[in-house]
Length: 236
Length: 294
Ligand SMILES: Nc1ncnc2c1ncn2[C@@H]1O[C@H](COP(=O)(O)OP(=O)(O)O)[C@@H](O)[C@H]1O
Ligand SMILES: [Mg+2]
Image (cartoon, rainbow over all chains, first blue to last red; front, top):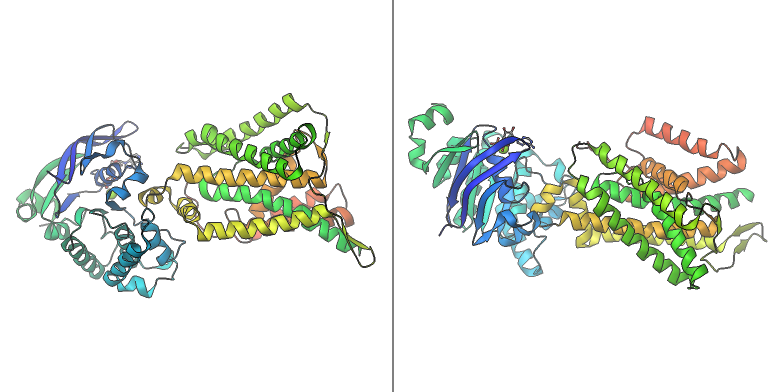
C-alpha cells in the first residue's frame, strides 16, 4: 500500500476551483515530482496535505491516517515535514533557533541533539552560521535552513515546494544533490517544481499538473522523453 | 527635592502603564491585532479586587489572585468569542471595530452592575512610605510595590519568552502562523496563552493603579488603556522592552509635565511627544523595521 494516497481532491479559494479532483500516490522511498506551470495548483496541493488549507472534498491518507480531518499542527508529529514555498524560515530568529523550532514536537533531548548533528553534517554552512539571524542569510542558505528545519522533525516524508526558486544555478545543483542524499538516507520526497528538467532528473515518478488537473503521469525517465513534456516544460 | 518626588511618582505611574502596555504589545506582536478592550480588562480587574476585598472581606493578596483569574478567563473568552472567528478576515478593520465594540460592552456591563458612581478603592498595598533626605523625599509603599512589580514582570516575561517552549512558540507564531503550524505549534492555543498573560497583567495593573489613585468607575480603564497603548507604540509595538521603556517615559513625562508645566496640558504633552517620536522613528524607540503583512 502507498505511504501517501490522495483521492479526488478538490480545493477552492472562495469560488476559485484551484484543485479539480486530483488523485495520486507516493510510495515509501520514492522521489515523486509534481511539475507544472505557475498557477497550476502545486502549492495548493501541498498546503492541503499539511492542513494549511482545507479541502472541499476528497481524501488524503498518510500511513492509514486521514489528514483532511487532522489539524495542521498535528501533522508534523505523524512524520510529515513540509518545506514551504518561499522557505518561510523565521527571519528574526537565529539559525540555531530555527532548527530547534523544527524539533518543536520532539521530546527526547538526546535524539534532538543527534538529529542536529546530522543536519549540521549535511549543511556545514548552517553550523558555521548557527548564531546568525536567519533573515541575513543568502537565498541558498535560507533554502538549506528550511530543509534543515524540516529534517529536525525526523520525518518519514518531506514535501518540498520549489526548493530551487530564485537560486543561482550553482545552488540549484547543490540543493538537488542534497535532496537525492536525503532520499538515499531513507526519507520519501514529494517534490514540487517548475524546474521540470531538474526535478525529472532525480525523481522516480512524476505527475504533470495543468490548471488544477493531472494531465500526465508516469516514470520520470519516460516523461523526460515525452514529446509534449519536452515541448511544454523542458523548452526543447 | 520635589523634582525627585515627581520623578518617583512618574516612575510609579509609568510602571503601571508599562504593565498594561505589555498586554497590548504581546497581543499585537503575536495575534497582529490591537486589542482596544485591554483597558477595560484593567477596569474589570480593579472591580474584581474591590468586590473581593470590600464585599467578601478577602485579603489583598487573595483579592489580587481572584482578579487575575477573572481577567485571564475574560481575556481568553474575548479572544475566543470575538476575535478568533475574524482571524482570517480579509480586513483588519473588522477586528479593530470588534475590539472597540467589546470595549463598550465591558464598560456598559460594568455600568449596569456597579453603577456610574465612583467607588473608593482600598489600597492593596500595606507598606509604610520610605522617607529620604530628612523626609524631603518620600516614596509611598504603593510606588515601591508598583515599581518592583513592573521589574519582576518584565524580567519574568523576558525569561519566559526566551527560555520556554511556549515562549518560542509565541515568537514563531508572531512571525509566521502557517510556518509555526508546520512546526507543530498550536496557533490557537498560543494566542489564547498570550491573551491570558496580557489579561492577568491587566488585573495587576488595575489593582496597583487604583491603589495609587483610589477612584474606581466603569471608565477607569479607558485613559490608562489609551496611554499604555501610546506607550507600546512609543517603545515600538511588539517589543517587550519597548513597552517597558515607553510606559516609564510616558509616566515620567506626564508627572513632570503636570508639576512644572500645566496639569491640564500634561496629556496633550504626552500625545505631542508621541507624534514627534513617530515622525522621527515610525516604528517607535525599539521597534524593528519589519514590513507588516496585510
Ligand atoms: N490565497 C489565494 N486566494 C485565491 N486564489 C489563490 C490563492 N492562492 C492561490 N490561488 C490560485 O489558485 C491557483 C493555484 O495556485 P498555486 O497552488 O499557488 O499554484 P502553483 O503553486 O502551481 O504555482 C492559481 O490560479 C492561483 O491564482
Ligand atoms: Mg507554488
